[in-house]
Image 1 (tube, helix red, strand yellow):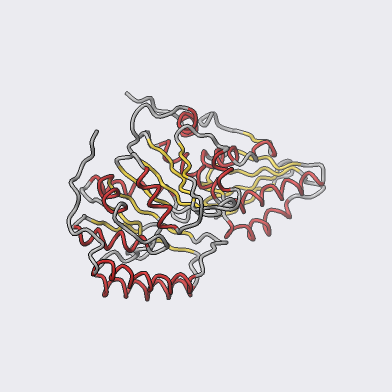
Image 2 (cartoon, chains in turn blue, orange):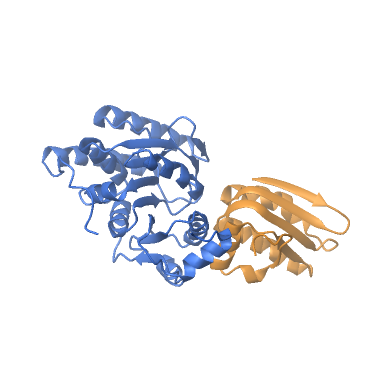
Length: 268
Length: 107
């Protein structure tokens, strides 16, 4: 039987002892110039995930950071943390893809580096995978979500984009862009090995592919706190998002996406 | 975040509850910083019910410590929650503070 450790002792064990078995959960954090935020986020995630008692790994997928993000993470020397360094900045979608495809867990969570969705929400998403869903998307748009600190501009833009996505793409998830999504390993590998968008809109593309490939997708309202100091320019990102919608549609028309799922399960 | 102060003649304690991040820095500075004076230069900050501190919150605690040291006092962090303890460790800020545990549960 697994010894029940105090949260701090569980964290210390995770930090110092390499997992003796494949992880049950992989947490992927994309990071681009996150020197100001990455360590508190790693601390919060490491404490919570270690307390759960399941083997887990943390993957920091750098996206060509030019600040001290890489050295801060590397210097931690945690036994079960992997740092994937990118030579240059390609976009959040590229970083998440590299992280997800490197993940070994039966479940793969990707979470933003600013801890805007507290890691404690993970347990609610994981429960739905247990009910048979392949993808569980954290949502700021679903009934019951608790959103704070989001500017009026961002709220209006989000609402407009949601309407476009819902009507134009048939995606029922009301918030495609929340940086907190959980995948089964098979779904993660199938979707991220075929998605093409390197930038911010990769979430939408992944959900679009999931919809077309028949994966079961659930949406869970989450607590979300805007992280001050975000470098996201809402208007610029929204314009890019609309361009990416067209790109995704064109990719589909040109046959760049598969129409059937790959065979599930991996070689053990 | 809820900030509750307990001001006794011999001891000043601030209890924080919730998430201590950049959104809360202004309120923290307004309410807590004035509690450190030349006459009352030791301040205890109870972090048992703080689930997360971001870098701005950490810099507020360091700023408070510097203000206390300037009047020959100190800030004592009390009953760190596990995530706060870990975050202080990995940011290497823990040695800047005296840390007290009133319970043995986390040890």
